[in-house]
Structure formats: structure tokens, C-alpha cells
Length: 101
Image (cartoon, rainbow, N blue to C red; front, side, top):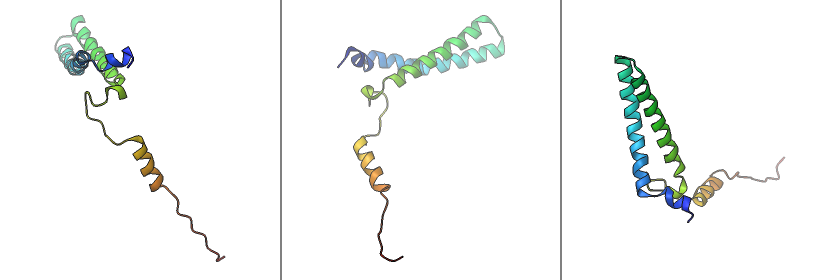
């Protein structure tokens, strides 16, 4: 495994991603509520920090890719060859040849 692949499935990094996916939207919602009650620079900063944290967490979660398979959420276990075989048999045209004009 390459160092990049090994770091993708690191337990500490997964915990950080989960935290970002939970804390980001919570901070954004608190910032929006705070801005609605009394607009200020700090409330706007809270909204921005929440949105940026959410985007970062979503990006990192998506970057786990196939190497991180099954580490955060279960993924379908059907293999590509099973899918290709099922698709080919389902879409195979039936050709009949007859001598009648």
C-alpha cells in the first residue's frame, strides 16, 4: 500500500471526518440562528466556519473512495463482473431467423 492509501483509512482521520460531518452543519445552523437574532461579524464567521467545515468533511469523506470501502458506511458487495454479466444477459437481443417472407 502507498502512504496515501494507508492514511486514508487511518482511524484518527476517520474520526476527524465524522466530527466535521456532524459539527460543520451544527455550527452553521447555530451561526444562522445567531445571525437572525442579532447580526454581527462573529455570527457571520460562525456560518462561514460551519459551511467550510461541512464542505471539507464531505470532500474528505468522498476521497476515501474504494480504498476506504466499508470503513465508514457499508457498501454493496456485488462485484463488477456480476453486474456486467447480469446486464449482458438482461439486454441480450433475441434474434430469430425465419424463411417466411
